[in-house]
Length: 291
Image 1: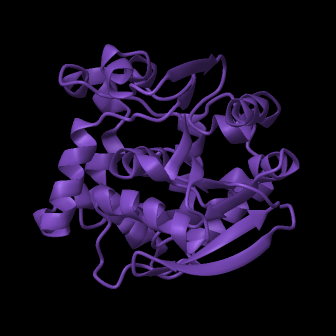
Image 2: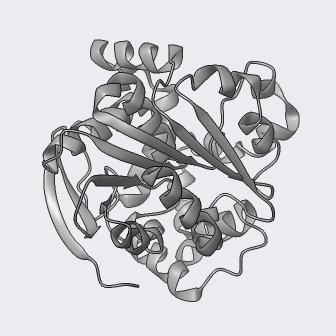
């Protein structure tokens, strides 16, 4: 792993630990599941070299970032985390980059506070319409979301030193020869107390009405309605889970991003494409941000 500067900042009631490199306009990078801030270990140096202050926080509950005191992981709160991190890091506006849950968070932030977002980059994310959400193959690719509702899911994820996590990575990015150091780094994060419960909490929040107070419900309604009015680069691979590419190519996605949407498909890459092919993915992100 590269040597990054590290820091801690309080945002939205949580102490976020982060990796940092470079000086200049803020480029905030948010990871997803099952991942951590080192997801952007290849991108941060390239952003720094291009003149950005690149920051990758560990998301709420992913150690060393603390879990929220109220135990809530609702997706609208993740969007608010992204919004509040901009100010907490000393910026008025920022470039936002996200993968998986991080993509949802930065997209939500762009809807809630478009004046604070200069440009948006989303990795391995799409818009799922009603028909696709009921498609058998698409549901196959989201089975874990339902499995994680079960009370023994934590035990499954932790079994055999988090073999589940490694298999999830290989399933979602089947052409990637994953470095052993990257897998061990992920395991080290998930071994920390509370991380498994937090990671599964993101999924459980979808079906737990207690997760959404009036403010979160209002934010979620705004995010669901859209649109995203800032320029957006959307990146996707051809080897992600079943029918994910259909969500990426959908008319629903084109309608949701009204500020200028540029879609790029990189053949042979999966869900973690920014780690699989950084020599291909990073220049596309940097060029878009600098344009």
